[in-house]
Length: 357
Figure 1 (cartoon, rainbow, N blue to C red):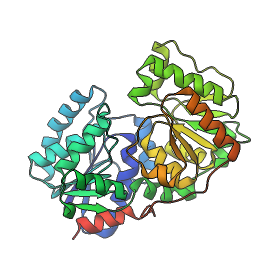
Figure 2 (cartoon, rainbow, N blue to C red):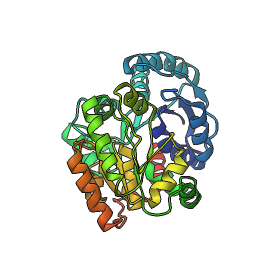
Figure 3 (cartoon, rainbow, N blue to C red):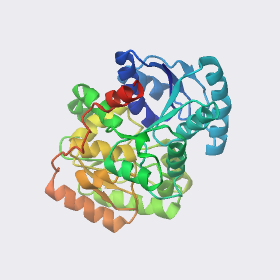
Figure 4 (cartoon, rainbow, N blue to C red):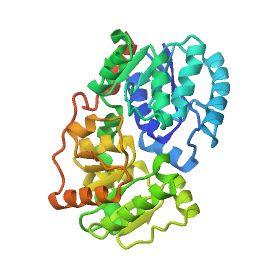
């Protein structure tokens, strides 16, 4: 069988890599890598391929920057030719980005079964484009691979045939476990002059960075927390642009502002951090497995399993909540790491076994 593995945004790489390796090892499914170019940065793209030991992409669409509508339209148009050239037996899409939905739509139009890895996650926040992408992709999919039991429950409540739903675990954790021997926290700490406890910050979601009042509240809260513990903040290009346009500064004592980091370096730092302040979904999962306190700067999460198994708390953009929660974590130190069921580094093998039946 020939399967298109469609991806395009940075979080997709960590989910596609273990699938690609499992398909190659299984010998039943021939993977064809299709990079849409949704988030295309040559340096970062090359770094992911090198670190995750992926071969070069079979197909690169080179979509590039643009609005969500423009990107999806261009992806769909270009994917038409890919389906005609490759004639795949199935399509595998991962996550919840524009590339995910575009791949599912074109596959459905061509009558090719869709497998959605990371299905069933719901924030119930329809202002997030990711929520629309998740729901629509799930409706189009023949195989729905969920990371946790809440995903199964969400899909069944929406009327999805339980026979199409398979709880397999979390592919992000497959990649995290695979990379564990290559983590180098001592080196990365030394490069950033970190000698004691520290925290990490990531911030990029539209609800936080596109609203000047919300962004100012978060910046003020980070400046306060940084008085108690150094905070390493790799600033996302979108966030940097918004800070400049709103006249906001990160030049505060204790805030260590750095360019976007490689995935390996970021996870190396995360593995020994006291806490992480983030609005990322994937980092909530990684922090849970690594035993790092996580303060999520959102009012909702599509990953409630991290609230149950990890030390994750939703603090929104309320500066008082964020500061109080951070100080409480700093005072008590790191929690014990706990893994949700099936987050054991073998999710990709389960996916490939089911697809190859």
